[in-house]
Amino acid sequence: MPIIGIFEKTGNACTGAITHAQRQAEGVRIAPEENRVSEDVPSHGISGIVYDTCRP
View 1 (tube, one colour):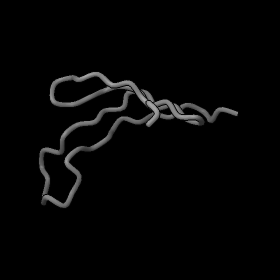
View 2: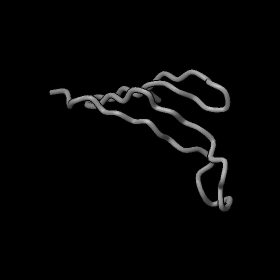
View 3: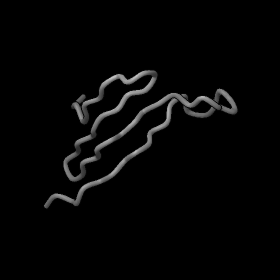
View 4: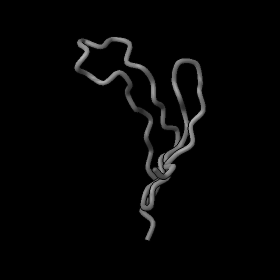
């Protein structure tokens, strides 16, 4: 499986960047969902995604 990003543990979350063939996202934060309404919803959420321009 290829590596698509680099993250660092910050408290109970992880922050970092995702690099893909055509997009790059900085300031990505993966954090646990504190107010889950049931076990059927995801345990973690992703936020703070800002894309740069498409690469040719």
